[in-house]
Length: 140
Image 1 (cartoon, rainbow, N blue to C red):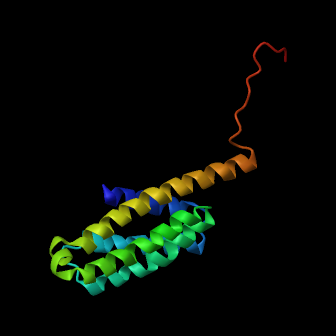
Image 2: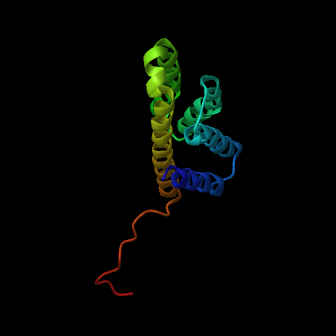
């Protein structure tokens, strides 16, 4: 299911205006997805989160979701710190991997919503999504 969501996000990002930020965010989210689907991930592999931690908040900020972007930027470092601070306990339950999976799922949902809301605003500004009023009872 996550693979389908990632594929849909990639198609949506590439279908847009094709700017470099869209392509970079797609790559960053794909790097994060590699960690989620990998059967074995050592702690230092989670450096692959760095592009997503940097680019997803910037992408969200460009769509007017600044506060959500800040939250998304803060969550992975918190999981890393908790993982190493509680290594005897958290390492056994896979806190870093489970947290990364939950974070990726949240990123996919938030990015889809932010993209949809920014497209609606753009359409409204262009005047294409205004409802047309039918000419009921009026002579042509």
